[in-house]
Image (cartoon, rainbow, N blue to C red; front, side, top):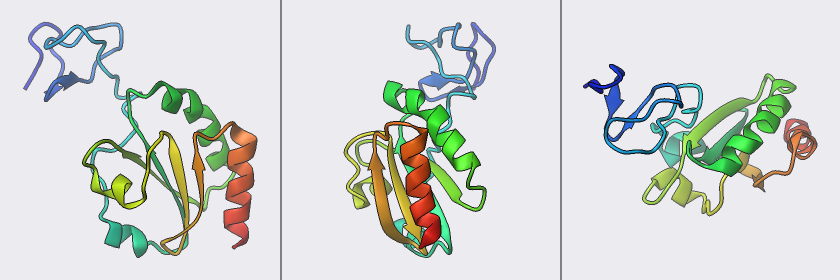
Length: 140
């Protein structure tokens, strides 16, 4: 389906267009594909528990200001740890994976080793804190 006014693809009530444009269904700014970084498709808890090696699950929401503000620090810290698998998962009411981890605030980083939670960072305060946690994870 396409937004008649902008000609961009529409998904439900969101359209992925330049943030300057408005979505045809409401007056809220639309999300760009660059900003829509949290996946709506989430693995099951069983699949997460079976992940081999080290991984980070980042829970957040595309519209979350704290998530957007923290994104550069998370990206920079993860760039120094290329072996870490990074899953960026959209969270919200009724999302089973986030509820299974007890996520209450965004962003929340769950650091896993062989599918088991080693550490968690809730609203991390910068690249140094995230990097230190990733260093501890890599040392496990």
